[in-house]
Length: 419
Image 1 (cartoon, rainbow, N blue to C red):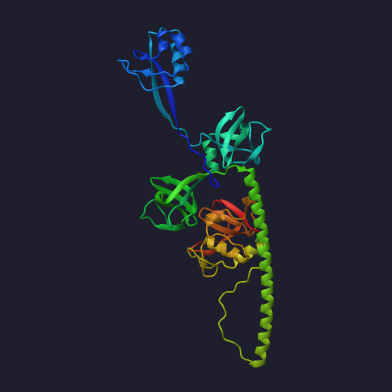
Image 2 (tube, helix red, strand yellow):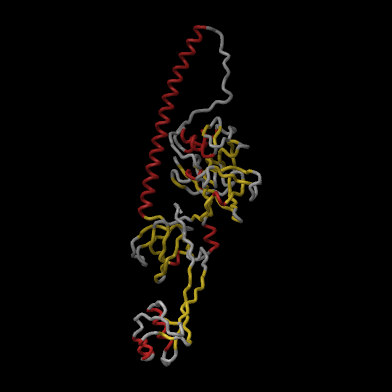
């Protein structure tokens, strides 16, 4: 979660059980009866369970209160033994997780009341850890925000809801991760994933993790990945302001880069046209023969325009070209992130060569608001949306760069917009 995780909690219940036995309390108040013991309850009490009256180490004032209460009106001749019963109570990892169920977002406030300062926002289906209660308010922690939310806006301890909004992921911790068709090192190699990628977990069993990649769902050894659960978490006021500022700056930078690219291409096109006319005239004056030089097998139009549709149009030219692991060439071969990176590079926009990293560029939009040119991120894969519920992407070594429809042929993790 950006990436904060919701903590798992395991508690140990320590219960003090008070029993009567032949043991005794080594305390002067006992000799004076229960009344004196109660009045001395704030003093330290030493508990002795040895028949020879050997004193034990120590106890607490809380134990003193329990002992005094248990004695009541009993005679001081009755003795008391304190037994610690350690019974571990293992809580589910979802017990303290609350999920926001609101139309859009709920404010996180500094105090348990509507007059508390707004510290941040928890959006619908986002998660928080409940730290305590104050009246009908929960004290929560989520992301970099800690404050109060009215309990009616949260659903606490619902494991199924938490699982449905959380995403189990596996971070690749080796240079090249082999994904196999079955949970065995002898199984067929389904695909490969570079270090640093984040894959959606489908299943976990016996030292193996089933993950989703472009080639399908396959198995990887748990020795080479680190699994965790990601939730969308709260956003502080400061983080929201910084994000909006950054997104605006990125939009302006992209627009300026596209404008410059358009001007440069127009200038270059004019120069090329003049040069071509001059060469044609010169050729007519010299010879009536023609050149037999081989023409290129496929030509590509330069990028034109500076919006998402222009990006989509440019990207579509390279359909049919090969997929190459780690490649960035639109003509000779690229992998999925190399393809997206190189398409946008033609428009003067620098992007990372990583599908996971591309999930953080530009600004986010919802899948139902996708426009041509948007970058669509999947588990271990990335593509460019071209409209009509269709994407263009460098898919696999077998298929190369191709179209796929519908765009949600796999679960969409994020949609990012540059222009």
